[in-house]
Image (cartoon, rainbow, N blue to C red; front, side, top):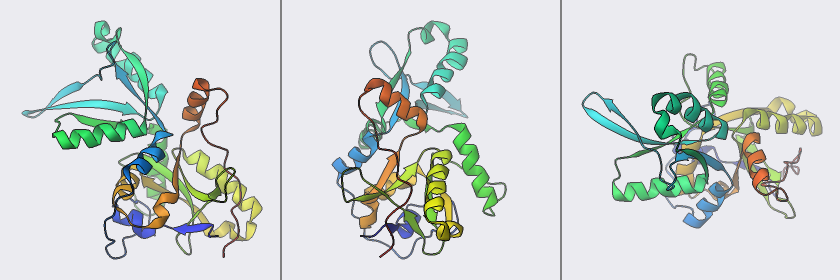
Length: 266
């Protein structure tokens, strides 16, 4: 059983890996993961948007030179969505804002909306809004890796990995012999898992690091890669989102807490 999985080439081809050490190696034949599997992976992550009483999305328009840009925002954080409603929309248009609410959807819903929009050549842009604290963490990691002055653009995901063979730490699936690769929406979650691993396997501590990748790149890889390891990726929601999910279903856990140490290498 492999407990470390290489996905460097796969994520490099997606063009959205921001730390050194992952680059495309040749061209892999495009072979999308079945759409139902992609949807299943994205279904566990909540996102939040604003809707009116009819359930319609709030479309914000702005002029960019001579062009009007229309956007619908989907927030990774429910708190950020609420702040946007309270601190901006209620000031700009209090009458409209009073009719709006923060509505939870899943990342799978967002994915399907974007896919459908592409088919219809929809002029509306459906934008994911990251948590600024995590963007700041991702930018700091870029700067520390030698890319000084660069800003992380995208939705950061944090992955514990090993430096030498460019492989990823895996954790067991509850009640199964399978193992998966956790991609965290919060750096703190990735650090906590890696700290537990270092305590369990101290001889590997110096060989570990946290890598930051872009969610859009991961989604592209799910759609286009024939790397079998890509199916091992699991998106692990933020602590805020986990608490939100539990508040909806108190007796159901969205995901088991990651174990500290993987099985030894083959």
